[in-house]
Length: 478
View 1 (cartoon, rainbow, N blue to C red):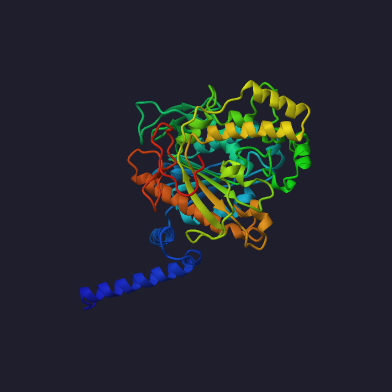
View 2: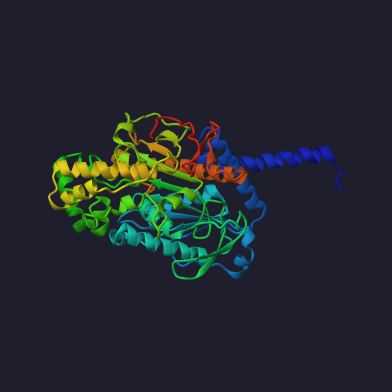
């Protein structure tokens, strides 16, 4: 019409497209500052594509978020569930905290993950409610998750990201929400699962079970005391001083309620195992390990030093002899991420609570001293490790050694406050890209539980303990 040849039109179109890409590249400067390789390249491409889609389709649905309040959508949104989010991402805060702890992390995840994710920051255990006990808080969280699932149309997948004590709340919650898939049910099909409140929701799952009727993808904890806080340097602000650690156990219930006794492994009758030990195996009413095994990926982020609340050993589920000199050099271009290790599942007969342990627990409760307290904790720690290592883990070590406020490591690891704890921005970026990669590999998977490591072709996160052991990267944590 205008006398312009098709070849010239193609050149003009290509130039216009390049200019538009450049403008989006500048807009997402937080990505452009990273080296463009590997995961960063995938992140950049995905973000740019998101930008083009938003520009081309201005009324397309963006990522959805929820700050723990009632969940509601318009009838138009629900009728178009195929265009809405299908992956529920639950953010869980720690002790004496609130959903606002995830303000920065939620914003980054919202920007990076795209419109297929619905992000919900849990609010059922805010502040002093976290003192009521891990079991009570876990049940609250389970009910909150079910409330979101029942009010959201189109959800098919679920993931958890939990900080500190929130990781234990999440582990308890998934044991309630877990349901074993029937033989007749496959990926993309549905059946009805009874919920805590007695109602029913459709279930979508991929083979090892479902969580709240959805396919479990990622279970991620940051600085969570999986082995409790009892023992040398498990509660670092006590400085490893035996007399302070001796006083902390009996005083904990008076300061942080039932939760304190559970963290120090002194809860319940002497003849009964502590709750954290129970949470490392399956029981008739709660399938703690089966629920963990159902997730395609299980990831532990742990501070190797400077965390005044949770020690490296307990947050990374390691024995003392597995801890080596903390590394300082960042890996994969993510600041303060100093080590990434893939640990396969280890076959084990599971945790035990023999009569000897019961006697040690009674002594630790009634007449605590250095000898009997240490003996009891060593037995419990080893049994908990036996239980938790029956599923595979990806372990990510973090070291804020060069940050302006290194002793804020416990809050920096999830950027509780953007201004005070922004040293953890690299951790959140690493976490977001890990989720993106896991979803990419999940789409390519052929039914094997686990995610392929981009650098080596072995599997991690294998949920079946009877499978052959895979090679590990880094130290052997057995």
